[in-house]
Length: 201
Ligand SMILES: [Zn+2]
Image (cartoon, rainbow, N blue to C red; front, side):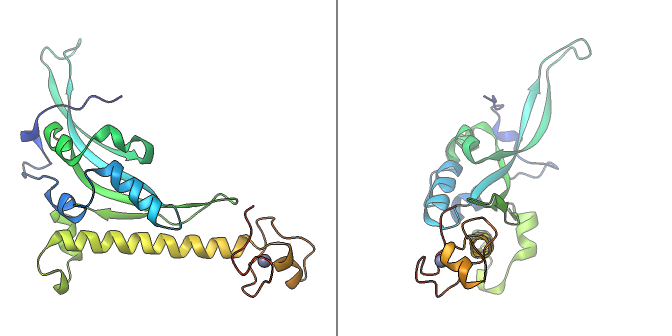
């Protein structure tokens, strides 16, 4: 497991003091990113995955080239099942881990087809470009709106892939095919067998 460097004063890039106050406010119904992933997965039909782009300073220990420890800025994506290693919002602050962006997408079961992935910025420099008058200058609202839109887009795409691939045997006959449930049959919305929901492949 990654050890994060403990220095909250070293937050962010470009000597700009940054923190996670905007994402923390936008997602104040969860205690951190792991819970955000869990809830997002649970309450959306498409079962989206969630990844987080984080930045923190890692201490490089003295080696043959350097006599003193030095700090290196690390920027990396942390995915679904690893998000718990970041801890809660509070631990992230204590460890000096800055949340740069979130990314969502989905894999449709049975056919392993991917939706597009959507990246949502979490810091003011990027969020300001997306701000709308209705956000009333609150970038947490901008972030939440962008995140919800991204999930919605993933949901719509996943649903459309599902409908193009999960037709049952009766759907298949309607389209003049012998068999369905093959990952290559459209769903017939008036199907008396699957009622337009399709079949589990
Ligand atoms: Zn059917």
